[in-house]
Every structure is written in structure tokens, then in C-alpha cells.
Length: 267
Image (cartoon, rainbow, N blue to C red; front, top):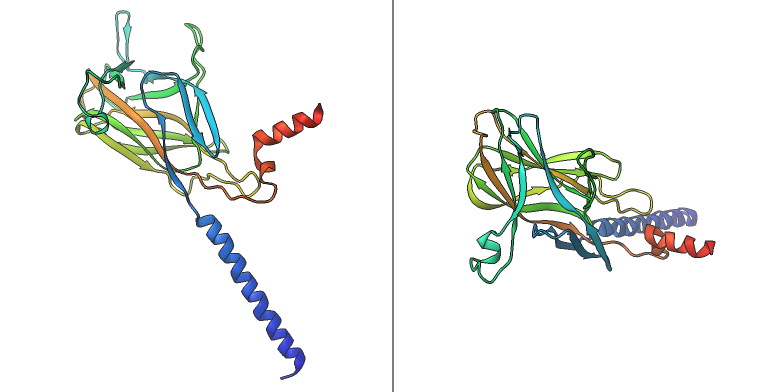
């Protein structure tokens, strides 16, 4: 074999090795995960919410509101559904000693005039917004990291209802995911997995493009009674991948840091 042929073969082998190494590095980076469990809402009645993620502390102010479809009952001046915080909780989470604890859960008291596919939406709003003539301003909860699961404790009274969770991606598309059926007795932890088909990253920097939580929706079914029922929520949390690759100049992919730098440059 001629010397030129040997050089061509060596070059081809070298290129193949480099390609394999680069592919391995990319795949390894994409497959690196660092899962963390974060409580988004303890349902304790406080409007201040805080969690720590990516070396930063995030603070949000929101509270909860309930709306229902058109056949929700109205009895005199009383309208349904009603929403309140109740001093009760899952024993599996906090035990049974009620005298020494101040835990609460979010209670929904519902009534409808007709059976059917009625619904109740439970969603976060900005405190202090809204009036008799204006609806309050909705608030969508930013979910840190790339969320894998969302779970929540829900108290059911063995009614044939079901519950969905709604999320919005960075392009504005809303997805509704089945969280579970409420045909059981007492507290139960319900969970939904976020499918990989819902985008949580982009090709361009910054790559991270997290989801926001929009609302829960409770559905009744035509074969079930709807004249009077109660449902309770506790400890809404996510299992999320908090890993982010570091690279030279990664601070320029942080939107908040970019705004700081450009503000300094304008001074």
C-alpha cells in the first residue's frame, strides 16, 4: 500500500475516533440529571412562596381561586364552589397530633344543579387583584428545572370524579395531564408524569425553557351525584431535573444576568 493510502486511512480513523468522543460527550451531557424534589405549594394559607434553585432564591406571591361551569349551584346569596383552608391534613405526611400542629389543607366545597361533565377550576391568582366588576389576575407558577413528575395529596369521598393538571410551555401551548380518579376514600397521593413530548428546552441559548403550572381541573361524570361534595388538596410538589451544563460564558445565557450587564453598560 502506498504511503498516501496509509495517511488517508490514519486520517479516517482519527476522524472516526474524534467523532465518537464528541458524540459521547454530547450524549453524556444530555443524559446527566440531578433530580430534586421541590414543594411548590404546601396549601397552608400563606400567599408568600419561596424555593431555592440553581444557586438562587425565588420568591412569588399568589393565592388560590375556584371557578366552575355554568350549572354550579347558587342558593340565595350563597354561590358554589367555595374555597377555604381547613385544619386537617394527611396522616401519612404529618402524623395525627392535631394539638401541637398548625398544618392545613385547601378545601373545595362544591354543588351543581345538574349531573353531567361539570368542572371546577382551582388556579393561582395575584393577591389583591380583582373586584366585583373585574376578575382577579391569574398567576402561572414557574416550575424550576425540567420537571419529571408532579404529585399532590388529594382527599376523595369515593365519588366518580377525576382531576387534571394544566401546564404551559415556553411557546404558549397548554397541556392537560390526567392526575387521577377520585373514586377512593380519604387521602391519596396522586401523580402525573410529564411526557418527553412537552418541550422544556430550546436549541439556542438559553437552552432552559421551563414549564409553568396553570391550574387544576376537577371533572364530575354524568353517572355521579353532584348535589354536595368536598375535596381537599395538600402538598403540591415536583420532581425536577436541576442539572445545567457549565461552559465558558454561561452567565451570558442567564436572562437576569444579561439584564444586569446591559443596565450597567447604559450607566
